Length: 284
Image: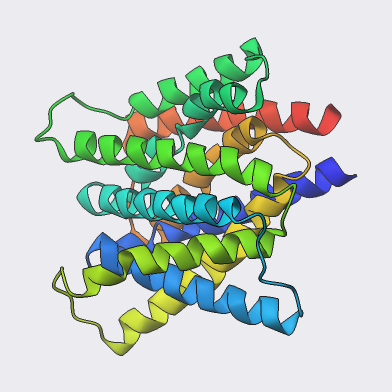
């Protein structure tokens, strides 16, 4: 039952992750400012939840604070590169290329946890990668889609690192505490960009950042970390490739973005892989 519950938590988080991509189009701001607003409201929300629940903010040993700060930096890079991908291309391109992170996880996770690399995990990851590269019309740095894919791949790599370390941390600390420290650290890291990049905020922008931070960050981040308690990061990583499916559907209805045939074909391959892994995860 715990594994089924974890799968539900991962899927719910992925739905919110998919919605977050649309904010890159709704907000006419630098990715640094978008992510700063996102992590600020997320960390504030998580702090209030922790205090209201009377949960301790203590982290020990101290080396874990250093790790959480590093993961906050990783989180900041992950989201900045993701929104950059959305802005230079489309929501579909950004989400599909970012969802390649199972490829990185399949090879990185065994190194950290001294586990054997399973052939099935590698095959599933490679299928996802093949689906992602189907969306590239040509390998030209001047091509917006190619740029979007490169930014998305970097976003995927950093998210893979987050998934791996969060798996270990979730065995020691509550998911709320982990999410709070990572979002708070990302806020501190990105704060100087308030003075480094030009921006102009109106009431609507602040409201959108509030929604992005509270619902699509604090809620989804906590759900994802909680789900990692009973399933491996490799499985969660492949399940998360449902994110572009949710995001593409919402982008069509809210942004009128229509993906190309190549993009749809890549999405079908990714979705098929995800469904197989989901069914296998429930049975094992």
